Amino acid sequence: MKQLEDKVQHRINTLCKELTQISETHQDHVIGQVTVRHLLGGMRGLKAMVCNTSFVDPHQGLFISGYSVPEFEDRTPKEIFFLLCTGSFPTSSELAELKEELQKRAEVPPYVWNMLRSLPKETHPMTMFSLAILCMEGESVFKKKYLEGIPKSDFWRYTLEDALNLIAKLPSLAAGIYRILFMSGNLIEPDPELDLAGNFTRMLGINNKDKSFADLIRLYLVLHCDHEGGNVSAFTARVVNSALSNIYYATSAGLNGLAGPLHRLANQVCLHFITQIHEQLGLEASKDKIRQYLYNTLDSGNVIPGYGHAVLRETDPRFTSFMGFGEKHCSDSPYFKTVKKLFEVTPPILKEYKGGKIANPWPNVDAISGSLLYHYGMIHFDFYTVMFGLSRTLGFCAQNIIARGLNQPIIRPKSITNQGLKGLTKGL
Ligand code: CMX
Image (tube, rainbow, N blue to C red; front, side, top):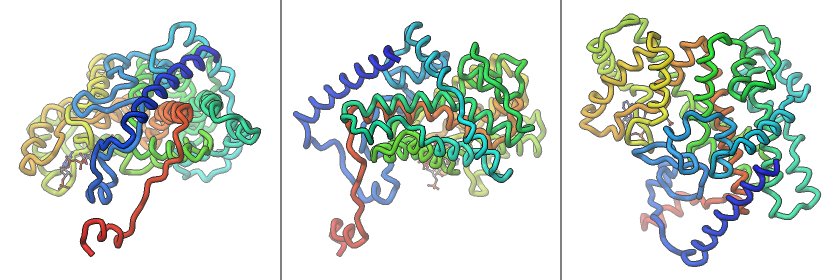
């Protein structure tokens, strides 16, 4: 993987030079204030770390290494991983090298399957996914090399080595979990000719005849790959890896955060919301009836799932990307039709509801992703987070490869007691 390594090294050198310059001249420059609201409000909005793999602009949404969603939505997960790590899309030769590297590392060790098959049938697929990654921790090359005493400047190389070994196995692993939990349990072999998304779709063993399903999976894996460094899962992975716990520990920990209902359950909740609309109002519910349904939902104290965002202030471009896919491939789907109607009627209602205090009345990515998957026969809601995790692992890995390259220190913010806080606010 000479070409990938060279490009990563180049990016690390560039970022390092920039940060050294900033640090040398502006080490004590004040870039913000820490308020009590930050302390008590989950540090929301507090600028406290550097992340160059991606950035979320409140109005334009996600940028991967500077590229906007329309600029990268047609790419493959492998190209996106390369972009996350290096800052540029791969050439055909770089892509071929990456493909070859991943192919030769793809086999999941038998002990992982034995462990997964020994779990109770009711185990959540995210638990299985996280456990499987954690139990491969002994494979970590970083861990072995660290014990041998490699220099700090090589930490990123073995983090990259581990990342490739891990990412290569994820499609088989995730699809295998699906087969064990929801199908007969027999695994489907990968096809070396297919790309990551195509292979994952093949190994799931559902809807293989419809080529657009593989394209939806590709888009899903591309659009969910990274969302800055401060979200629960990415931040957790960063914190764990900052202690030099290897990428298997870090990824498993990040996925455990991703599994939480406040982080990733939203696309299931959105799908459930649409199912309820269909059950109560029929598949072809009119916009007026949907409007009334939305008011009833809001008046009973509930939120409209899929709308609003902590950072975004416009329609999430990832939503727009999925809408484009839906228009092209499943415009007759009742789920897609209802998503479209909701997109028409929801923002005007949210804009004026609660005296206009809802900061963002526009849809986020979850307003549509689950509906598209469901349309293609991916009806096991619990599995959606595994697919999300598969994609997000690309971001976890890239963020930590770069963090190790920059020799970022262990993350260790300071906590204070109520007494300390009273003192600082002169409330003693
Ligand atoms: N429906 C109804 N009310 C909403 C709303 C929605 N979709 N979005 C925000 N509000 C309400 C909030 O509940 C809050 O009300 P209170 O002050 O009475 O508590 C008020 O508007 C202000 O909130 P906000 O500043 O606009 O939004 P937050 O940053 O606090 O919350 C989010 C953001 C996503 C949790 C919220 O918009 C929400 O609950 N949306 C629905 C669930 C959803 O789609 N989640 C997916 C998030 C996607 C992601 O994180 O990637």
